[in-house]
Length: 229
Image (tube, rainbow, N blue to C red; front, top):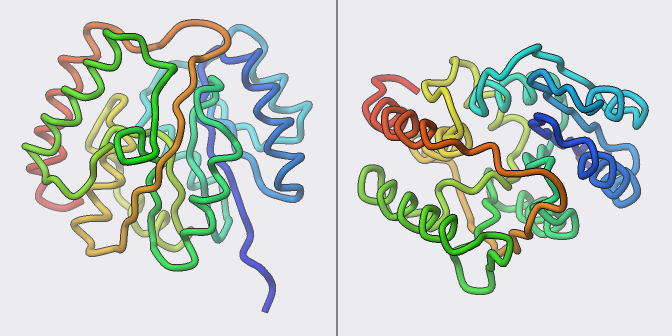
């Protein structure tokens, strides 16, 4: 029986310097894997970097949100195992190995900053407080089964990924990763959290805006009370 195929989905918006290094690292560590870059209208050359690196490029032309980027990336990634991670250099490629291996036994493996062994030196005091507060709120609204609901670094079996993305996302913004986890919980899929280190981005600034917080609160309510995910 052939080994399972591997793919990566990288949502991207103006991440040229870090994207280049990440694509090189992933290709070197997992040669032959499918790397999908979902670009939301970058103007810094990110699409050209993706093409030159041999990645599958999904160009969407404008900022349409993380949730739909994940769905579009999974649709373009026909792999048995799929890793979703940020393109800004904050997720370490070497941490992906444990998430991929965990898929031998579970459907979804979450890279968590907030379990024993995890860390987030890349977050300043303000963003650390934001992350911990938002995760506490999510655990109250959804459930306490996952410590890092908002983590954007996770691996999933391809069959599960395609099952969970048959319907369009309810979330419109950065809670796209949370919605996939919640759909997995609702579907009774097996989930494990593994510690990862969240590094400081090497270039650029966070895309999180103040108005995104209000949108996220609305998304959380939509996700929680969606009749059918």
